[in-house]
Image (tube, rainbow, N blue to C red; front, side, top):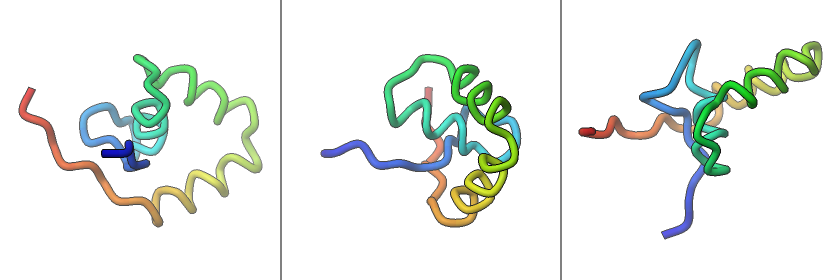
Length: 63
């Protein structure tokens, strides 16, 4: 099964978008994704809002 982009249910600060992107690319920590979003702030805020409203949340894991 192909990995699908979803909002993270476990690793989230606000809505789980950065955590979901980190899980999608197989990065262990979403800190680097959050840092990229902060450094590219005006445009990334719009992208974040669009992603938060358009992608589904991943189901919670048991571990």
